[in-house]
Image (cartoon, rainbow, N blue to C red; front, side, top):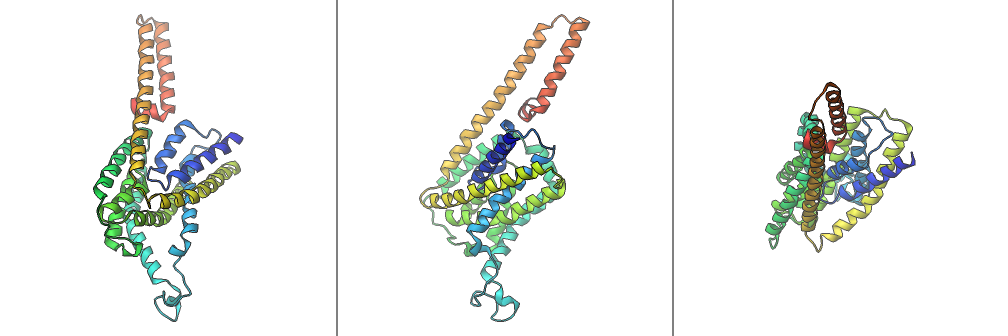
Length: 331
């Protein structure tokens, strides 16, 4: 059981790093799960775990940017009125939350209606690898296009409701295709409409709060929290790890983009995607070769030999079904 807790820490570290860097946290968690699997948990545990641990990462944003997103104030100069209930509501921050909610609308609608269908179609390592490559190329192309251009928007309040909706449409890509990266998609969308890198990253952090809380709530409602005490402990450990790692990563990213662009993440995505695709198809080729060798060994099909071939085929099929990589590529 100690090994299971070590696995939860690894998943928390991966989540804390990849949630904020434009490399896709969901995609990385799917890939890590192919090599590091929980073995002593219920069937639905990981479907909840890989989303709920994101709450730890979100709490890091809430802590770091609390003053920027907390809508209540005692300063009447920032409030709607000098007296009454509205005298404690910060008009600039509530306006920000209005834009955040507008940006969430596209992903919320599509997620509620088609989440299960998209999960069945695209939540596998091959699609993740393809998305890593495609959006890696997009990052490099868009950064080259963006180089030397003057940003139209250099502060979060300058983002309009129209801008927020456009950014939300780009976020929709991440809701459909794992491996795209929610932060990557929103940053690309923001850069294309003239938002500076710093503001793009900040708005992405703010946007993550309702999006990830909503995604976690949907998973909890769908699967419940009917887990054992050990499974709950694994969830908490993963969340706490993601929270601690996120605190460092967010500060690192904001310092990094002051002097650098996002192209390094584009190259990382491309290289990782190519390596993973090569690995998957190598496994596929090995399986096909083994099956050909088995078939070649039993060309003369007597009754007993035929039964043996059928048994081997069933065993191979069962192995493929248990491995989502090979199942996706070969079956």
